[in-house]
Image (spheres, helix red, strand yellow):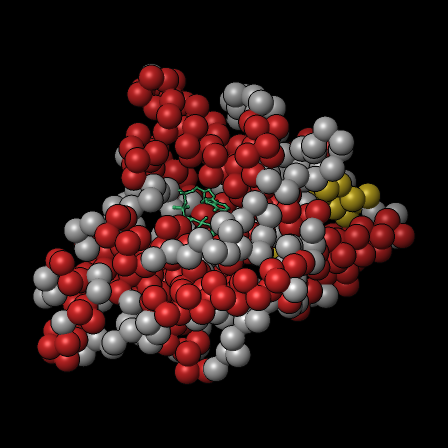
Length: 472
Ligand code: FAD
């Protein structure tokens, strides 16, 4: 008989447990994608994610066609689409990989119940994480709230990845009546995507290429370079991992292979540092699963009493568009706007600036990132914002307010990053680049704005607000 593999955020053909299980147990496999963004509300994919999704779906369909299949496309609601496709294809089972966002979990439970009610078997696999969120727990069987013990507990269970098992032979079923990809309307109507197209190659082949490039290049210096936005020191795998064009298992395997080829001594530290970041991704999913309220609510409820500033459109717009007058902040926001990605160190700096110097609620930042990041991911984004704002698990305490000038001097010491993204300041002398307001003539000449807040007084005001919250 025929089985449906319901593709969601696992847009690859290799290391795909759901596909392998379906192909092993059924004669034919029908690959299906259902477009139902409203089912992910209030976190339906933003504009940059939709751009990526379009290209990744096109790539997956292309790869399937090379193998004699095709990706069948439908519009939601998912329950109705799956029932209709299962009936038209005479399918006896549906396979998928689990998602961990609260809305997706509710939807998937509904789909499962509806399919079972008509006698169709469903199988959910783990295709996105090294460990399911419930597989790692404290001694008392509770979820972790602190990263270090979480990762200690997970790391010892991470066995060297076995070589990828040979996939069972796949015979594809196809079905008439699917939609063309453009019917989903995922691409921008006015072309703002030049920067994205220049920066990225969505799809499984692009993901594998990015992984290879990283393992052969930046990986060996990762531990020392990962905090430097002026270097290409990180993997930029985040959108590929978000859309499941690559599984974390495949990443671990590639790291192991690299370590074996180049010698533990040389790569050991780098591999461990990189695994730790994959560990943060696992931890973020662990938190989202166990604390599903956190995309909206402070994990640390004492912050519910914090006096955030009233947001006004002008203030937010200056932050969003990189016109705050603080060069390292603006460089990051412009990198995000142009390429759909921002370096992790700079994400922390712009988040500290928004939630502390401007004292705006972290949700305003999380929302903007959601629309503009190609790697926008509810688990990682929520965790990143709550960590930066000091409201999360194991967070940087609120009173530790980044000084953006000191951060910039340390992590962009020659100013190459700021000069790249802020051409107005390209001619600024090195000692003024990160604080151009110290020379009024330079500012006037450059057309670059003065800082929208004074770094010192806004820091003092944030600390006072925090003290008031603590004093209640
Ligand atoms: P690398 O350094 O090469 O790391 C490898 C992989 O590990 C990444 O691809 C990512 O999957 C994972 N990873 C690394 N750091 C983290 C982290 N701190 N938390 C969780 N996973 C991590 N990451 C997202 O994928 N999506 C988001 O929406 C997102 N929003 C963020 C918001 C804020 C305010 C902050 C501070 C961080 C956010 N991050 C997010 C985490 C991190 O910034 C990105 O994962 C990283 O910059 C991606 O670049 P890379 O692939 O080159 O990272």
